[in-house]
Length: 449
Image (cartoon, rainbow, N blue to C red; front, side):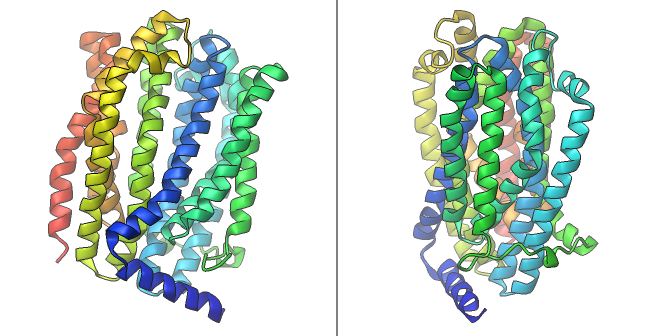
């Protein structure tokens, strides 16, 4: 126990004294690797099943809305508890940090089991709600069943990964995610093509890999200075859930509304055929892959922000914020240029012989590249507000980009411009979200004195 306390004291000194540029970069590396690998194996399903037919990637796109939904719930418990943990460790309150860790983890495990059970009972109704058409439904059902089965462990893995990051142990989270992701990439072609399981094989590979990640991450909890996830520390009290909600609502708003918006986009795109759903699904995976590095760098910023805010070292919080904005904005600008130039080639990687899908996908990707540079500032602003307990502003901003602004852009774009309007919805949403992020971030920075 004394060794753990000494390790945590050493971690506190490092987090509150090391130059923030060096600290954020050091913590960002494993998070970037984790996010990149997660993005690769999330994209792997789409990449491999796109070789089969148009309906298979469309089915993955439909189920993506459900994945966004359970990730929203997991991030509510994960980032909600982790935000509290980082502030508590910054204030040297280790007892309540332990309570928050176990409460967030076991709550997500129970919630995931209830969601999975509901999904099996109402599977077809849920898939139609997520945007499936009659021709996509058989493929979506085959892909969905294994994702449902693994839901509790998938959600709990997200929680553990977030808690490890916020304690400054991102390398631990990277280990579990990396092994699971590597396994998924290997199993995908084996199950899909060798065993001839089609889209079901992609789903089974994902479920198995996520279960392996869960086991590894759970075994790593309690190692070194990591807070152990003891069932005896599970304290589902109103006060604890208020603390989790304070840090988790922005993530819930962001991911939850993204799930609703993507489902709505799929429903409208279905009016233009399965190829429209498939093309937009491919573009969304490409954008998520590109954004993985932004999120990874932001996740390096988050524990620095939380620790130093808890220790009342506000100047370090500000310096870390602007450093993170600068780095991610430069990255987004370079990626925007490359994406605009090579749009057709990027989309053709998925279905090289489908000119209709390539044409629509390249057009949608180029629209996004026109405003993508803003994603760095918006993401860092959201994480800053979330980790400094500006809950209302953080929640509103988090719910904007792929939430209510995205929903408004989809509805308005489709009404006036049809399929082109749907393809333009994400960049329009990005621009409107930037207009919200600027005053929110500026006011939050000014309030720290």
